[in-house]
Length: 221
Image (cartoon, rainbow, N blue to C red; front, side, top):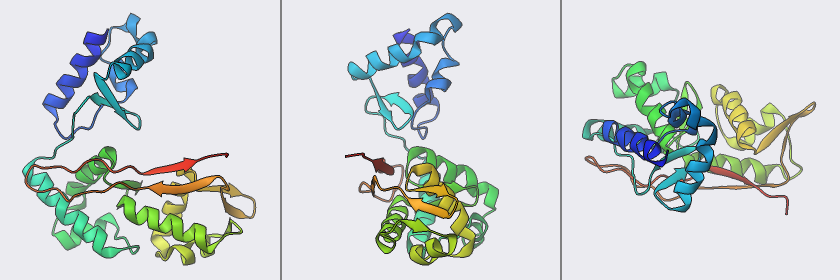
């Protein structure tokens, strides 16, 4: 069974160097049916032996670093520069594509890939936002509202974002654990701690940066 898991990951990395890894469910589809119920045990064993690694929900061979092709890396660098320059006024995919002279559907797979790797936060089909900007918005909202009660308008004002991004970002923060819905609106979870954002380097010809973490850490202590 360990051989099946390692072979599945090796084949994935060989076929798609820009794929950061596989979900357990994706690995299971490549396993013999009778072995699937104990896949989690095998994965835990391989993690302990440091033959594989885990990033969020994705499993990969130890030492694997997702790398884009030179063409994709150059396009991603241009996209990332535009997103960072926009600050909190993040452009929708349609506007981003227009500014780059590309078709939106041409950019979407690369943006989704950046989200899977962890370089971008996928807010919705129309928005992909750098982790550092998401972290800045989250901290600003938490600091501006120590009483922790939010309406949509108060969130938008504290976040400094436009109307189009407001609801997708609120729903994203709901999912991440910063906010939770209540009858009066939303509240900031009292146990929330700021996101951690790792350092990132903009990719150059074939080189890819280490994956930054984008985590909402909650603690009851």
